[in-house]
Amino acid sequence: PVANVTLLRSKAQAFVQMQDPASAARMLQQYSTSPPLLRGRPCYWQYSNRDTLASPSGTGAESPSVILLLTVQNLVYP
Image (cartoon, rainbow, N blue to C red):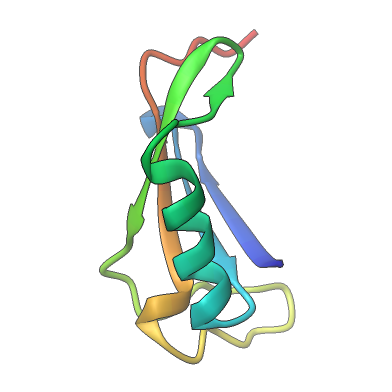
């Protein structure tokens, strides 16, 4: 399950914080063979180098292995 998301609109990316490392690993495994489409554009997942994501409560991720970087190629915002 997703715990937190930080959007980077100008880069067509998002940091997605999962609740635990197993959830992050399942997400990567699920989409490694067939990337999902967002508005018809392929999305790619990878582990992020970030070790924390700021959340509204001020807490961050507990481990770098729970934060994924989602990149959408050639995304056009409406």
